[in-house]
Image (cartoon, rainbow over the protein chains, first blue to last red):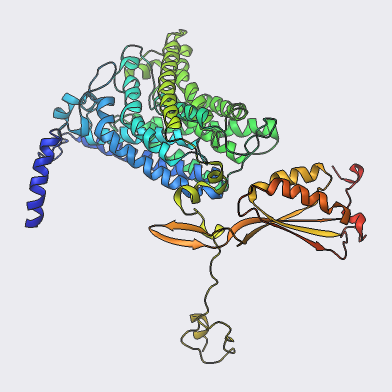
Length: 491
Length: 122
C-alpha cells in the first residue's frame, strides 16, 4: 500500500503539471441535493444503459446480414469503435457539444472536469442546471448517442472495409464531427436556438449523421465483389443468419426505449412514459407497413425488410417522439416503413449497402425530422420550448422550413467532412481490403481467425481414450479407467 | 461417358457454371471440400496463440458428359479456374460405366443430354 502511494504520488504530480485540467484528488462526493435530481439521474443512467445495449443490436444485425466468413469481424469492429468513442467523447467531444451555449460549439468541460455538484457544473454545462441532472449521467447519456451514430456509419461498409479506416474516422467523428453537429441541434447551437429546429432524440443528429457518414464511405468504397452482374444489375448476397438479424432488431427496439424516452433528461413529471408509447407505436407501424408493401411487391413476407421497417419506424419517430401526440406516431412510422422499402430497392441499384443503413437511418431520419414540421403539437412545442407547432395545427410551413434547413445543413456538413476524411484515407492507407482478402473473408484476413472456426477448420475426432486401433471392450466388461463415464455407470 | 472432377477455388465456380450453362451443360454438382496440395496451410491466430490448418477449403465440381464433350468442359474449367498461383486446384477425368435417370429408368448417353424446353415443367 505504502509502496503504491510512493509511486502514485510523483506520477500524479507530474500528470497534473502536464494536464492541469485533470482532477486527481477526490474533491467532493457527487452532490445531488434534491430528490428530483436523484430521480432524474437514475432514469437517465438507466436509459443510457439501454442505449449502450444498442451496440449489441447493431452487432447482431450486422453479423446476421454478413456471410459467415465475415462474422467475427463485426465483433472486433463494435468493441473497438465503442471504446475509441468512449475515450474521445469524454476527453473532447462532450465539451464541444454541451460546454456552453455558443452558436458553433461549446468550450467548457473537457475531460468532464466540471466539478460534481449541479450548481458548479452548471457554470460549464448549462443544461445540467436547466434539467437538474447529474453531470456524469448527462455526459454518459450523450456519449452513448455518439456511439450509436458511429455504429450506423459502419453497418453499410460490411465485408470489405479495412479495419484501419475505422480507427481514424472514429477518432475524428467522436471527438469533433458528431459533437459539433449535436451542439447545433441539441446543445443550444444556432440551428436549435436561432432557427428553432426540433429534433427530440436525434433523427437528424444521430441517425442522419451516421447514415451520411456511411453514404460518403460507400461512394469511395465501392460494392462488394459479386454484388452486381456484368450488366450492372444488383444481385442478392444473403446474410448467414436471420435469427441474429431478428435478435439485433429487437435489441435495438428495446434500446430505443432508452433512446427517445431518456431524451426527456428526467423522470419527474412523467413525460418519458408517453414517449415510450409514441416510440413503440411508430416501430410497430413501420413493421406492418414495410411487410405489407413488400408483400405487394414480391408476394413474400420478407424477413430482412420487416427488420428494416422496424428500424425505419424507430428512426423516424426519434425526432418527433417528444413533440407529437399518440395519433401521429403510427402515421409517421408507417410512412417510414414505406420509405425504407422503396429506398432500399432504389439505393441498391447503384450503391451496395448490405444492411440498408442509408435507407433505414438516412431516408427515415430525414422523414422523421421533417415530420416534426407537420405533426408537432402546440402543447409540446411549448413544453419543450423549441420551435412552433407543425403544419397540421398551425397551417404554417415555417416549422417545416426550419426542419428542412436543419436536415440540409446536417447532411451537407457531415457529407463534405466525411467524404474528405475517407478520400484522404483512401489515398494514403487505403480503405478497402484486397480482392483476395475479401474473397477469403475479413475474419481470416484481418483478424487471423474465423468467427465460426469449426465451419472452416476440421476438428480432430473425439478421443475414446483407447490407443489407436485398439478394439473397444466388450459390452458388460468391467470398465477401464479410460473408458467414458457413460459405460462406467452401467457396471 | 466421362466424369470430370475438378477441385477449384470458390470464386471460380460461378463463372464456370455460367459458361457451362451457356454451352449446354446445365447438370453438375458441387461439394464443399477441404484438402491439401502444394498450397501452404493457413496460420490462424487466436488470443495470442497460433494454429496451423493444413487443409484449405475448396469446391469439388462434378460433371458427367459424353466422351466427345470432355474437352469443352475441361477447357471451360481451365479458362476460369486458372489464376497462375499455387492453389488453383486439379482436374480428374474418370470413365463412367453407366448412367440411369431415376425418374424414367432410361439409361445410356441420352440421360446426359439436355431436356427439350417442352419437357421442363414451368
